[in-house]
Image 1 (tube, rainbow, N blue to C red):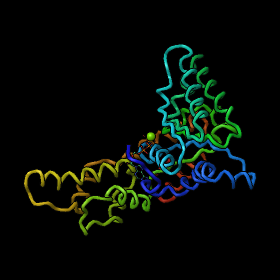
Image 2 (image 1 turned 120 degrees about the vertical axis):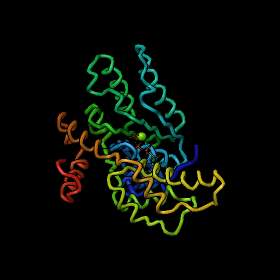
Image 3 (image 1 turned 180 degrees about the vertical axis):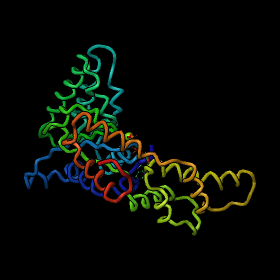
Image 4 (image 1 turned 90 degrees about the horizontal axis):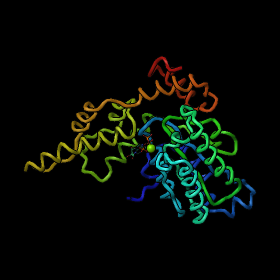
Length: 292
Ligand SMILES: Nc1ncnc2c1ncn2[C@@H]1O[C@H](COP(=O)(O)OP(=O)(O)OP(=O)(O)O)[C@@H](O)[C@H]1O
Ligand SMILES: [Mg+2]
């Protein structure tokens, strides 16, 4: 897989800074952390709507630092065989310890111990995971990242202090972020001078980063197909991009509604203050009504 760095992630500056301070610098400059006796507490949980850069950020973190990176799709740890899952969990943590410095990334962490599965088996799996997590206190050389797009399915036990105590909201891209994301996905492609990034960003309110990537792909298809039919080569122009935008619906409003509903229903507001701030902003800007 191609090496990804923070340059490939549009905007999200605040989250990049947090990851730098909690994960990247402690691995790069352990001497400074030791000098200032800054404790290293490096477990970050990223949450937010699909397609807005959580997995991308984790891969970019790996690309920024020389450490062993374990990209774990959490559901792959789960086995229907009694006891197998515990062993899988122990195994990945053990590997990370052996090969430290390392970063463990649990993608789609909500599949572990979600409260919707109240069964005994699920409880055990969660406990096995918590035991490993608790065993990491004060180690400076193993960092833990996790991500989810259904934070309401996360067991609150995972969010107690000392576990994932840094919960970061990865928001939908705003106007400025969408410009950056268009730039990233048009990079290296032949682009006509009439392409107006600000206009594109205006037209894509409510679209995710993944939507924008697809729009750029779709737009590239038009001149490509023409060329394949023997027509003269030409650059991707504004009209191609506008056509591509019209061909895709913005994907984010569904998630925003669902998130509000589920988090309120499960009384988990206290865990996700950044998300509720975001809802408030949306309403204040009259972009979307009825979220807060
Ligand atoms: N901020 C961004 N900058 C550049 N590209 C982005 C950004 N956000 C998303 N993308 C594009 O969308 C793709 C999907 O994003 P990603 O896999 O990070 O989403 P996610 O937040 O993990 O979603 P999910 O919750 O569905 O797992 C990325 O591989 C990238 O091409
Ligand atoms: Mg993802």
